[in-house]
Amino acid sequence: MFPAAEEYGVDIALDESDVEAVRSTTPADVEAAGELTFARNVFVPLTTACRYTCTYCTYYDVPGEATLLSPEEVRERLRVGADAGCTEALFTFGDEPDARYGAIHDQLDEWGYDDILGYLRACCETALEEGLLPHSNPGDLTEADFRRVAPVNASMGVMLETTADVDAHAGSRRKTPGQRLNTIRAAGEVGVPFTTGILVGIGETERDRAESLLAIADLHDRYDHVQEVIVQNVVPNERSDFERPAVATMRKTVAMARAALPADVSVQVPPNLSPTRKLLDCGVDDLGGVSPITKDYINPEYEWPALRELRAIADSGGVPLHERLPVYDRYLPDEFRRDGFAGAPARGEWLPEPIEAAILADDLHGERYRSVARREGPLAVPSPASGD
Ligand SMILES: O=c1nc2n(C[C@H](O)[C@H](O)[C@H](O)CO)c3cc(O)ccc3cc-2c(=O)[nH]1
Ligand SMILES: C[C@H]1O[C@@H](n2cnc3c(N)ncnc32)[C@H](O)[C@@H]1O
Ligand code: MET
Ligand code: SF4
Picture 1 (cartoon, rainbow, N blue to C red):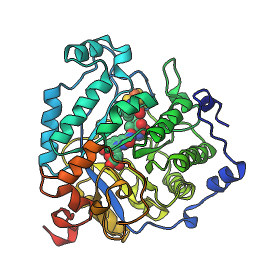
Picture 2: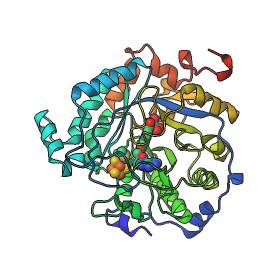
Picture 3: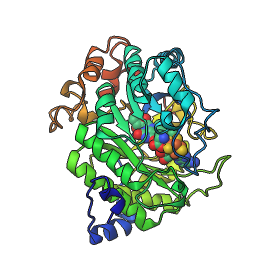
C-alpha cells in the first residue's frame, strides 16, 4: 500500500476496512477530552537552510541568505526562555541544512562541528545546562542519526505531513512519504518519545488522511513511542496561497485522528493556526508548544495566544487547562507523575540518563519540572475571570 515506504524497509499494510472505518468517522462518533494541556516553550530556529522546498513553507531561505544561530545566540535565547518559566527548548529547523549550503557547512566546521546534528547535540546540552528540556524536530533522520541526538532530548518529532504524493512536495529535492515514515520508524527503534502529525489541506484527500493516521497508529503499535499526533491545517502565507481547510474538514479530521489512535496518544491542534474552540468536542486534548516569548518562526504571521487566552479556550470547552512537560507523563519516572499515573504500566526505560538526571535534579528552577508534571504548584494559569 505504501510502495514508497517499502523502499526504506518500512512495511505498513493497511486493512481496507480499517481505512474506511476511520474515513467515515464523524465528530458525533468521538468524545471530547477531559482536559487540555500545553507546554511552555522557547523556539530556537537553529538555521533557515533546508534541503527541501515545500511549497507551503515560508521558513526556509535560499543558499546565500540562510542563517545559522551561533552558540552564544542559542544560549542567550535559552536563558531568556528559562527566565520566562519555559520548560521546553524547541529546536525546529530546515532538513539537513548543511547538505546543500556550503556556507552553513563551513561555519559549522569553523565552530568545530562535523554537521548540523553535532551542533544540535551541543545546543541540547546547553539547553539542559540552562534548565530546559529539549524537544528537537530536525526533519528526516535515520536510525544512526537518532542515536546521536536522542540521548540529549526529552522528546523529538517530525510531521508525517501525509502519506500521499502531493504536488506541494514536488521537485527534485522533496519530502517523500517513504522517508517520513522511515523517520518515525527509526525513532521507534531508538525509543524516543515522539511527536508527529498530519498537515491538512496540501492536496491530499480524505482517504489519504485516514491512511496517514493509520500508518502512524501502526508504527505506534509496534514501538509505543508516539506521544501525540498534531492535526495541523495549512495556512496561507507570503509565499503561497493555500486555502485553509474548512472548519467542517478540520472537525472531521480531528475526529478521524481520535478514532484512528489509541486513547493514550494525544491529539494536538496548534491554537495559533486552527479554529481551536470549534475543534474541542472532536477529541482534541493538547495545544502543543506555546511560547510566551518567541514567535512561531514557521508561521510568523500567526501569533501565539497568550496563556490567558488558552485558559479561555479551555473554559469554553468546559475542561481544565494544565501545563505539561515536552515529554508526556507516561514516559516519566513514577515519582514525577501525577496521582493516578504513578504505578501505571511502565513503558520501559524511555528517558535517557541526561534527561532523567535533569528532571530529577531540577535544582535550577526549584521543583519546576516536578510541579508541572504533577499539575500542581505555582504554575497554574490564571482564569480570565479572576482578573489577576
Ligand atoms: O514534533 C514537532 N513538534 C512541533 N512543535 C512542538 C510541539 O507543539 C510541542 O512543542 C510538543 O508538543 C512537545 O511539547 C511545534 C511547536 C511550536 O511552538 C511551533 C511549531 C511546532 C512544530 C512542530 C513539529 O513540526 N514537530
Ligand atoms: C513544522 C511543521 O510546520 C508545518 N508547516 C509548514 N508550513 C506551514 C503552513 N504554511 N501552514 C501550516 N503548517 C505549516 C509543516 O507540517 C512542518 O512539518
Ligand atoms: C521548519 S519545518 C520543520 C522541520 C523540518 N524541516 C520538517 O519539515 O520536518
Ligand atoms: S517545511 Fe521543513 S522541510 Fe519543508 S521547506 Fe520548510 S523547513 Fe524545509
